[in-house]
Length: 159
Image (tube, rainbow, N blue to C red; front, side, top):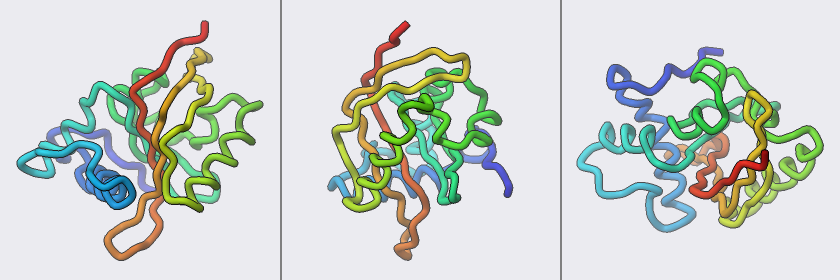
């Protein structure tokens, strides 16, 4: 499987993935996560540079991250190459992975949740609590399921 390239000006900040995330968010929540940009490239750049976390994973049987903005890379203490090689289940501690699986099934069933909170762990083992995360399903314009995404603005380190 080809890994997505790190968002940059040269690849218009992965505009296709950002479009998928923003349009899917708008379908379930009534408006895009970010609005008011004059073009999709500007929107994609704003997603990548946003002061909150935006992250998504694919549809594999063991989903792998396929997007994370700069804040996500910083918080999880990974490079782009590391992120897009990481099964998303590893963002949770092993004892919290069952809870995470239940959450993702809720999202699949209802389309989104806007009240998720839980503990996540960075590559270096640094634990942090996220609060009021929105998690939503990603569907393309033809209605095909493309994965899930999450965004959150609140977190605190636990150690």
